[in-house]
Amino acid sequence: MATRGAHREEARLDDQGSEEENEGGEAIALAPSADTLDRRLVERASARLAEIASSLKKSFVEMGEYLLEAFYANDPKQYAARGPGRHVTLAAVLARCESFEVPFSRSMLSASLRVAAIAVQLPRGAAYRKLPRMHQELLAALGDPVAIEKLAERALRTKMTAAKLRALLDHAKGADDADESGADDDEKKARARAAAVPRTVERLAQTLRDERGRLAFRSADVRRMSTDERNRTRSAIEDIQRRLHELEALLRTGN
Image 1 (cartoon, rainbow, N blue to C red):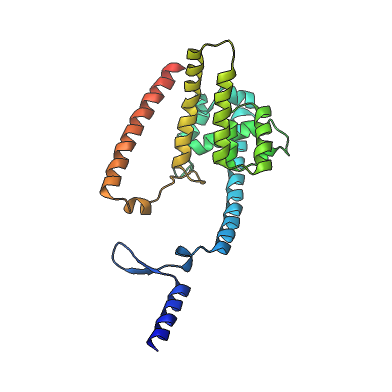
Image 2 (image 1 turned 180 degrees about the vertical axis):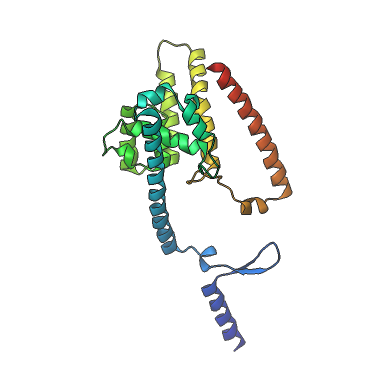
């Protein structure tokens, strides 16, 4: 009898999931999927997140198209000639980012504009327009609509992940630098370092923001950090801030 009772209790716990204690010592009942892989839930969640991502991309595209039309008369040449940082009026709008007035990050608005400037040069049915937002951002850095569309078709056909696309772009850039004629090794290395500047900063920005353009980490994440992790994070932030200030000074003097 005791054995049968123990089995019934185990079965009940299997149905309800396990328990975990929070920081206050309170027992928290977890869903079964926390300990056992629920493949149906994985599929449902993936499908729902894809729907949400589609909605977010629609807003992202709409923002970029509006900015290109409002500040550059829908002309990518004007955008190329005078980027957001050098457009006095647009810069004033970007200065309001992450406020109640403009509740988006500066990097998100700039990225949406960069993508829009590429998309407007391609047909409505272009593969580039069908890609996820992150793929569009990565390809936009190439600048050449023809080359971008060629890679977009490949990415769409093979359902390439953003990580694989990024690796492909890095490899292609390295090959271009290696094959380029008429320049010595020092010049090739110098150009490679120059090209690495925007890519490095863009990757940092992408890592720190979520799909909505907000900080990728939440207060709950910070609360769970140990003292050592907090100290290491503060030290890294200070170092990043110093390096970004130095880079910003170089950008100002380099214009």
